[in-house]
Length: 426
Image 1 (cartoon, one colour):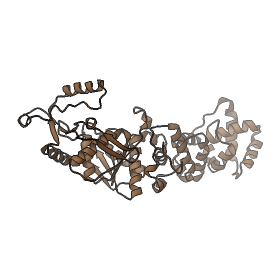
Image 2 (cartoon, rainbow, N blue to C red):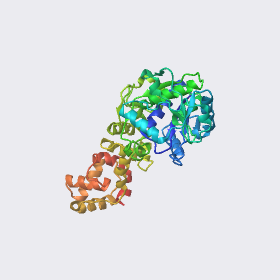
Image 3 (cartoon, helix red, strand yellow):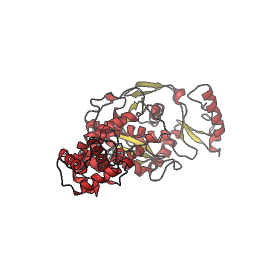
Image 4 (cartoon, one colour):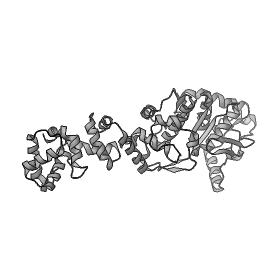
């Protein structure tokens, strides 16, 4: 069983989608189930409707799952297991104030330490704990020896006890921390492997330690993929934004799976990736989000697309319009750009003043002209009737046919628009 754990405090980031794709591919390759876990414990940050939006996006990308779990369904399990650790003296109540903890954290940062808590409350006498009415957190007792994480990509990574620290597993409001909830959820779901970003390495070590302290024997495999470096504030790294801008789901998947990795082919679908993807394909170095590369991959997918399907992205269901749109892929990269290019063909013309007379002349001739299969015959007929020279004809005809002054060769445009000429000049 593999899982994708998703927060619902905002729009889905491409880094999250990348993690989902890798977990899904590993699950499919191994023939295991894949589940979605919604992280909805923090009610202050959770945005209503984001869970359904997330599921809709995953469906759009062809990511299938067998079950959806909301962390809020497991609150009683977090409380029970925290209580178990307290009874077994593997955890303790921490009454330290926020101000004192902030001071200790600042001192640790100044000393360049990864840890800051000094176990001030670990050995409090029982009577001071029982009679204490102050708010408290629950901290797990720091390990006595190093925690070793066996990573499928990075190899073995060791964390000494001070690095792990006596970290918090339950907040003062008695809700579980993200790390504790994730560790318990993975136990309850019988997760076998987890693919996550390399910036979660320490959190993964803490999860391993939590499960060890709870007596969980199964070893969960970890694979920490290199960080995808993006500007978190840049809206172009939101999945929803990329889709709105006209990037295809299959192209986004292709890009996120391939970036920084060694794969047997450059352009592929998610279905194809299921057949050959392995952990061995994943690189070890951090990678930066490259919008230009995504554009190139998106263009490649558009070029391979069936003409009728392509036409639907520009508002039609006609193979000829699809082939017309394909002509513009020499200069364009997204379905949004294509739609903005095709739509004006069927709108009122914006005619330069110097060409108004010629355009009007050609338009009137075309209204009366018979149907011509070939462009050459059509061209001869219009030139003969209009008395325009070749240059005037081409400039005017381009505006009549495309509502633009530049573009692909007219002979190709005519090939795909000849059945629409009556509508265009009407």
